[in-house]
Image (tube, rainbow, N blue to C red):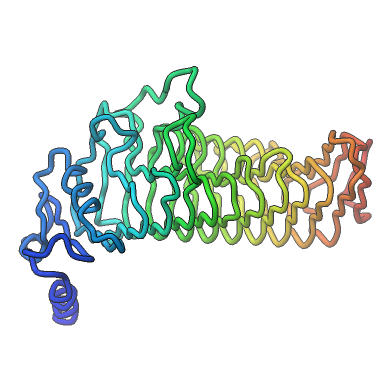
Amino acid sequence: MVVFLALFAFQIAQAPAKASASGAACVIAAKDSSEPSKSGAHIVCDGDGDQEEINKAIRELPPVGGRILLMEGTFDIRRADGALGGVLIERSNVTLEGQGSSTKLVQAPNQETNVIRIIGSGVGHIVIRNLYVDANRDGNPKGEGPENVSHARFEFCGIKAFCAQPGGGGDPCHNITIENCYVMNARRLGIMLEGRNMRVLNNVLGNAFSDSVEILTGPGEIRGNYADITGKTHVAFGSDRGDNIIMANNIVHVREGGDLDIGFRSWSDSQRHVIEGNIVTVDKGGKCGMAIDARGYGAVISGNHTYTANDEKLIVKIGAGKSIVTGNVFENTTIEVDDATGTGKRIVLKDNVLENSAVLTKNVGSRVEAEASPSTQITQ
């Protein structure tokens, strides 16, 4: 305890004095933060629309950018007037950081927005880390935007980065990292990032009616995350209109009562996805339609492990050529080659362990090469 207090005092001592809250770092305490945190903070929130204080601090960082440090406690997040989110990052070179799961950003009921929205032409070099983001989907049940506005229905996320309003233009966002966060209870997506060099690292993700994590455009990586699926979720980890994306060392755990459509997904006509070293496990009483749905060209699917405790088999689907499936352990899984592209590009399946599993081919658009195994069926 003495060491902890000494370290805490050192952190506070390194923060700018209260009079310089517009400096390169700003410390913000919640209404229910501890007294030491409040006394060392530049700003103490009142627990009602705390995004106002956070957004003001972000705007007042110097032109070179800086860091917003949120102390432990619960921050009440509401829709900023005329905006697409509660906490708004509309400028480059910003780090928004908490104390881990003890720093909670909770969307208030009836706000129908993104908890954190990164927006602005060319906005980049953003880091969000060590936060607990609760999008409170039960308290924000609508999740629908104007039907005639592209992607408007996806403005109901935990954390979203896109350079403009739905349907708008501008230079893409870039170089955004979300790390060591908990992102829970999303009405649409937990984390949705569109642009170049998007990185989602070492987070814990909960249920999302769309995707727990999705990267668009690319390049990007989704690495070291844990998706804990206990309710209805469409995709755990995926891409959309994105090339050059790595999904590695993630765990998808569908627990009893969980209902997941797809564990890992790459989008149709995408190029160069590496899906490697991941685990998809489905407990008794959980549901998962597909463990992996690789729709794009040039997929490398290696070192993964899929398993379900239920009678209905998981599916690993390969939907385009220039792809290789190797070094995986598939239990209670059907590996389904369903290439309707007609391009004739090669698909290789080799050196996999198949336990109560089979390989099925539904289309002959590709040249399929698969190892012979007592557990393998190859049908045209």
